Amino acid sequence: AARRVMDHPGGEGPGAGVVTGDGDTIKVTTDANTKFVKGRGKRREPGSFADLEVGQRVAVAGDDTGPGTFAARVVHYPARGPRQG
Image (tube, rainbow, N blue to C red; front, side):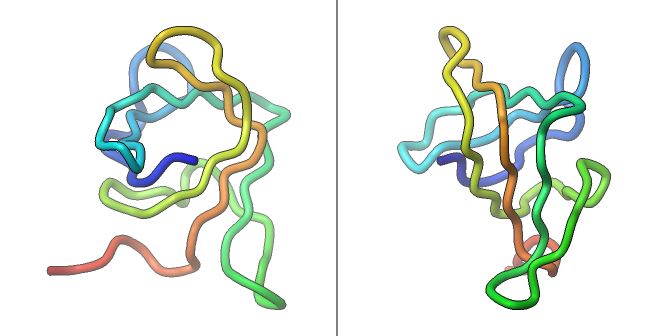
């Protein structure tokens, strides 16, 4: 699971640089089949790549596609933007 969006968008095509829980930076790619989910519990709703902000916490499920790259199938993030402070 990825941890924080570092840059947006990143590199070629839709994607973002993300810092993992281990502190490594990886490129997470998305495509038309990636599902974005905003909010928690009963307050979940469809989201979009455009909702993501630098510094925002995310959880990403998908597949390793090579060294330092990850293809996202689901990106889940809080309804609010990045934490301040």
